[in-house]
Amino acid sequence: MANIDREPGTIFDVKMPSGKNYDKAEFRLWIPEKRKTLRGILVLLHGSNMDARSWVETSGWREVLQYDKLKITESFWHDITKRFGFGLLGCYFTDKPHEDMFIEEYTNVGMGSGQALLDALSELATLSGHAEVANAPLALWGISAGGQFNYEFTCWRPDRVIAFVLNKGGIYYTAMASSAARRVPGILFIGAKDSPFRNDIINGIFSMNRRAGAQWALAVEPGAVHEIGRSLELSEVFFDEVIPLRLPEESGEPLQTLKLEDGYLGEPRNLTYSPYNWEKAKEHPASWLPTEKFAHAWLACESGKPQMA
Image (cartoon, rainbow, N blue to C red; front, side, top):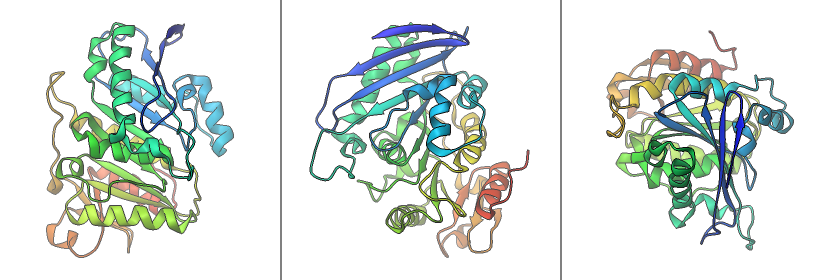
């Protein structure tokens, strides 16, 4: 374990011992400069057996640019964390060798990898001198296997999750989420030209849980394959809108629960949205959109139009 001083914040690294369903579990926490108390942690996870720790540094986005040919500012995640007084955590999980390596066992978080994340936060709390990190609420963003991890973590410990982003993953262990997990706002991204296997799986998870009232949106990116694509744009609006609604007034209190009827219903068939209607929600799988600003952003993503400021 080591800490590295950098501007405009401080970085702390920890490693967890190999566990039942994972080989490596390594983490890097970035804390904004002069931040006395963190209100939460924004957690980033990369694709299958890939390392997101460099993403917490401004230079880390060069890796993303190479990975996905994105044109974004390198301070993207830093800007979000500074707005909310959060820390930024990059994760690196790998599987032990097994017969079907395309099935990431470490995303089955209840088998040990989820606890490794929580144990790492406890160690980082001590290392950084920020005791609140140990029990801080988490906002989760991940691509591919990273999105799978986020979904499974939300199903396993919904009490710790402010909101989650599941971005074009393919292998999931939990079909029907608990009622508590369904109350955690989420986005499930699909690339219209991604593998039908992945898309059908995500569509199935979304449809089944939305029928039971999950506070989730399905975002289908036109023309996108298995890539980050435009998910960052919509994720930023999502976090900006949802985090303030979910955070409690006092640190340590339970997260606020949002009401379905306070949101909007996004219609994928005709690309419209309207105030949430219980009867319309029963007709077919439509997205739950927490605010009208997010509804506008969702509609732009679905229709392939630019996001409006």
